Length: 98
Image (cartoon, rainbow, N blue to C red; front, side, top):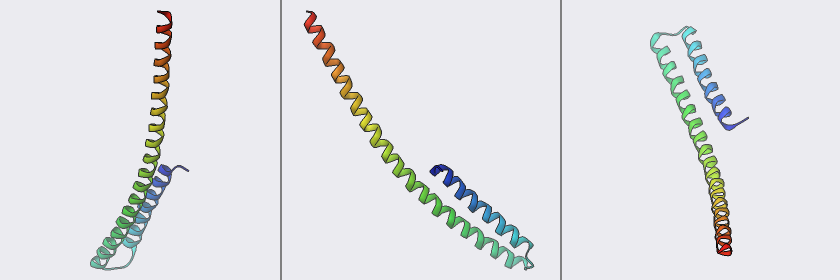
């Protein structure tokens, strides 16, 4: 499973858990004030979990982008070397024909 799919799954699970917890609280026999306090507490917990997951996914994305930058730099250098070789070969042929 790709990291982006895992990230989406984590976010979905957190949102689903928050919705489930909120639904359970709404059907629990509590006073309005207690119910609101419980909902706010669950929302804070969900927010904290979402922030944690976001931070972890950001770290993974940064690491992946570093790897991609390194690969792109290598390919760029290879292309520059190949271009330099081609230009040198063309110059040699042009000089040999003169």
